[in-house]
Image (cartoon, rainbow, N blue to C red; front, side):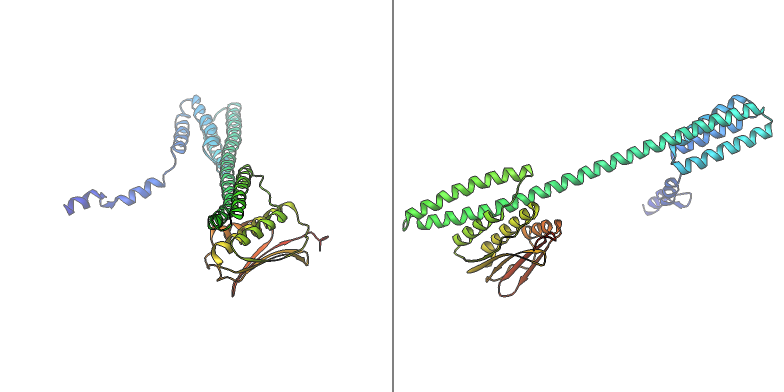
Length: 325
């Protein structure tokens, strides 16, 4: 059986892989056809002047089957050989010139149209790739928006629901207020999700600060604020609001902190948002929320820094216009 298998793997003592390599290096079928048509013309030209039609056909097909540079070279070689053979045979000058002119015109014309067709095909492929990348980027944007919106809101709903369930017997009035807050937060979340899907989600720093204080207070975390009135662009405000939301969400979820400090200030034409807690410090691996936050900040030319030492300090810095201070 071993002898049989070795016999099947070889042809005439050569391995099959060598035949495969040789077959991969052969000319494409259309190139072989062009060469065959040209050879027919050269062979029959001494016996029949109508064989010039083969030369003309070969010249016309060159431009459709090759690139611009190789097509021009191949056409020049074909017409040069044709002219030499006609000179040797003794063709009439007018017949020789007309054959060469027609072959050159058809060849160059098809080289132009073939190159244009190939360029259009490449552009179409590039457009499709750009469209695919744009759709992927849009999906990632929507995913980040939904994470930022729903992650914070659902955590707040859970916190308020747990607080209401604990207060239902001891303080029914406050429990009812918490339940009403859950309803309001849920309605607001629904509106934000719709806005995020439409791509018009915009953050309001003042509203986000109020929400952050409410979230931290509901979680039993003492809040300290140092909030300056800093004029930022709409896109920057949106990113800062989402960063504040994600940072506060991480404090509530992971830090087990008792105190949290929120700061917003401007210095040296840079707006800084700082969220500092005295918790146990977040894990070293960057999660989806922090990764998405970093991508948003860097997209507007800002930076994000995270320092873990007896708590966590998360700082987002975005550049301001030169007229601002």
